[in-house]
Every structure is written in C-alpha cells, then in structure tokens.
Length: 181
Image 1 (cartoon, rainbow, N blue to C red):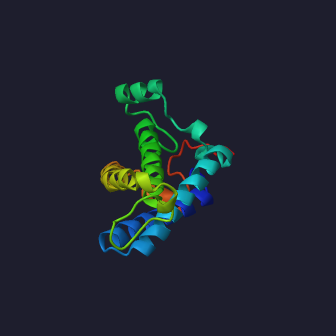
Image 2 (tube, rainbow, N blue to C red; image 1 turned 60 degrees about the horizontal axis):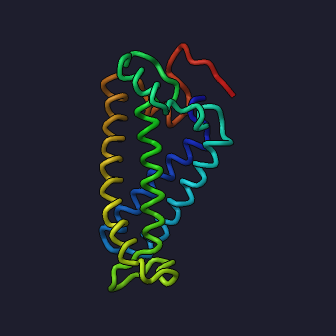
C-alpha cells in the first residue's frame, strides 16, 4: 500500500479539522476554532512522528524532497513516483509548516473583544504580534490548499491517475508498484 491506514485516517481528520477551523473562524465560533486549531497542532505532531516511524511510503526520508529531485522532475516529468513527486513533497511540508505556525500563533492570539487564546496570559506583550501572524498565515494556508486541491484534481481527472481512490483504499493503481515495508 502506498498510503497506510494511519496516513489515510490522518488525511481524513486533517480535511475535517481544517474545514472546521475555517468555518468556525469565519463565523466567530472561537471556542470551536480553538479546539480545532489545537487538534490541527496535534495532528501535525502525530504526522511528524509517523514521518519518522511509519510505513515505508509514510517516512519523510522516502519523500522526493531535495534539489536534485526537483531539478530532475522539472527536466523529466514522465518519471513515475510512488507517493509524492518532488513538488508534492514540497507542498506537503509547506502545508505542515503553515498549519503548525498558524496553530501555535493562534494559541497566543486575541481578538481584543470576545476571545483570548489559551496562552495569551503567558506573553501578554506579544499577543498583538501573534495575532498579526495568525491573521496573515491563514491566507497562506488557503493558497497552499487551493494549489493542493488543484494538483489533486489535475492528477485525478486529467491524468487519470486516480489518486483520490488511492487515498481512500491505499492501493496503487500502477502495475509496476512493488510493496515495500
């Protein structure tokens, strides 16, 4: 399996929790927003753990994320990758970093009216700074998510690689796939 059960469950919870975070933030349901933000923080921590100790295709060392992989992919886009191609790997790491930074900054943020994050009292002099960071980072997350969904749609519907199906059942559709544990 390219995507083991842990990755598929993580991905499902990530989608749900990001959706809840966006909706609760837009409608000012800040207590739900706080819970979903903290949940996102721990989901990403779990994924980092699984990136070191998980299955073969889940481990970060097997991601195609280095300068040579990126350059080779740009030159020869016909090369097949099991899991993420170099740009997909870069996208995933970028999404993880933005989610972590957005979650942490949210814990130290305040709207100065109704809601204070759980750690606002620890560093009151930095609340404005963290609030500004939180308010900017979520736009970067939107951009990354739009790019990610566009890439998924491109691979699913134009290249017919059925990556959504693969994320659901974890099985590669490539006849040359060799299972590695």
